[in-house]
Each structure stands twice: as structure tokens, then as C-alpha cells.
Image 1 (cartoon, rainbow, N blue to C red):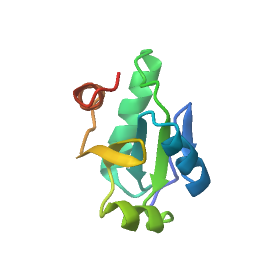
Image 2: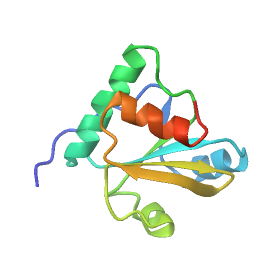
Image 3: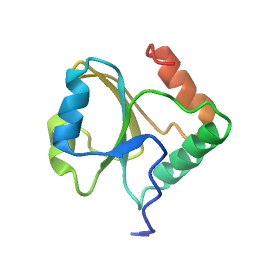
Length: 118
């Protein structure tokens, strides 16, 4: 396994912890979740895409949470995440959309727009 340093978390994002996630779910607003691992090549490309969106002023403004696939196993088991490089949208405590392999800014924006998030 090719392990590299963890990518810096995007500005405005939060690292997953159960209490914070539960608070976000209670707010009944959309929340973007990234299932991430430092060894995941798709995750590297997603990070580059999110960085590009931030630099161009097009970064999503919804709350976003990075879930570490290797460390937050309870989250993955509870919601059925069996891999990395996945983006999901949660609202009101429930997952409403999931997609893997979104590695370009346009693909990420289209996923959000297709699921009612701008």
C-alpha cells in the first residue's frame, strides 16, 4: 500500500466526529460527506478538484465532513460505505445521494446540482 501524508482538509470542512455529525444532521440541512483515505488515488484527485473549486470561488458552501475510512469504521459500517473516494449528501439524518469517482470540479458540481445542492 502506498501511504502518503494526509491531504490538508479543505477550508470550511470538518473532520468527522460523531457529536459534530449528529449536530449537523439535526439541523436538517444538506451536508456533504467525503469517505477519504490517504492511500486512495481517487481521493488525491478529489482533493485537487476541491482545491480548484476553492481557488476559482466555486467551492460548495454547504457543511462538509471528511470521514477517514481507516479510522472511522463505525461510520462506514453504519452507513454501508465499503470503499473510498466516495461523496455523499446527507439531509435530516439520512443519506440522499452517493457517488464514487467524482474527480473533476465539473463532476462534483454536477453531483451537487443534480441533488438539489448549489
